[in-house]
Image (cartoon, rainbow, N blue to C red; front, top):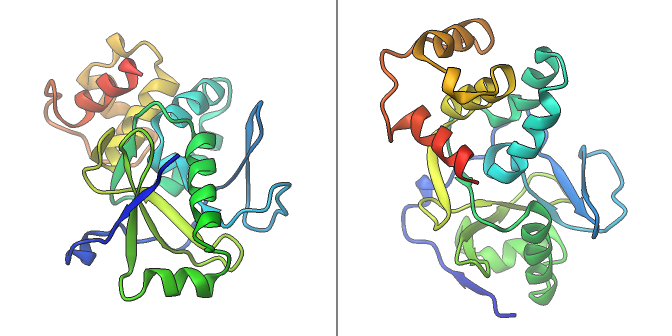
Length: 223
């Protein structure tokens, strides 16, 4: 399998910053399933990769929604806090979280990115570089804050198989899916009630087809 990485352009400021105050979700993968661990857990599989699928993987979120529908809302609200409030790039392609994790891990091993120092040397003089995965999607590799899981990844801006959205939009659609389920019942009144009562967000004036929340609902339904 071939891997390609590209040097970023001069717009380093366009890289999505890592938000302070939230633990990233660490992932490890087996043939049957993948498991999420906090930064303090000791993984069964040694890896340097940090990835937050709550912010960046639509398939993962759809799987979580089926679980959240069986739980009380406060527990779900706590879990989706790591989505934050910024613009995010959400991957909706066919690669699973485990497959992305394994591809990046193999790339890191083949390029001897085995320590924070080696990753810093490889990145120098840039703050990030981009990796092309087998489906053509582009992923940012940057220095993470954790000394063990030091290789931080997320989808690149405007990558194939991604949609660029506001975090509150993603939270709104998640809440609609969890609390209503049948999106045909998600009229503007119900949507704004959930935004106000469950997410502490301001109401929206219209729900336009092909834009914002409506566009993301279509992405959820098409996967």
